[in-house]
Image 1 (cartoon, helix red, strand yellow):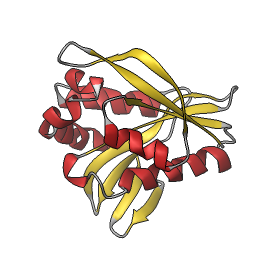
Image 2: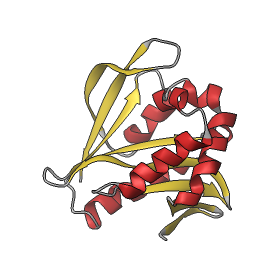
Image 3: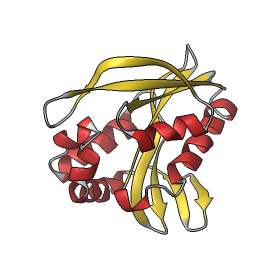
Image 4: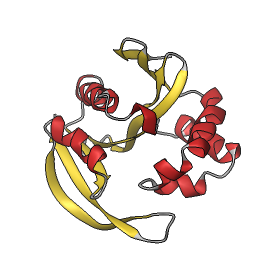
Length: 174
């Protein structure tokens, strides 16, 4: 199991099947906060929903690296690659973090670590991050790390309250 230290007592740990229940508990406890910007929250209604997600990641034909973010052993978020195209050598990074851990640089450092992994270990050429245009804290992460705003994807995600949000699409050449 791959574990990377980000800060003292804060780590990225490779996703494992036993994480599903804890992931559901965090999503359920932070439903109002996370659901404001993340469309998957509305579809995560039971621990079985989180287990299906974890199983889909771990059982995929092309397994993408996904990590839990932890302070000591406490789950505080999730980060990983998605929609990796090994032929075009591109990937997207997605992430979420519990509200109380925002603003500490945790996700910024984790994204930087994943960018290095994408280049050094996976041989990828570019990384994309999509952030709802109104989610300013999330947008600051790729901006801090030298990603360039490539375009705005209109009506990118349908949120639980029934409205669509546009997404800024950031790209970083590795």
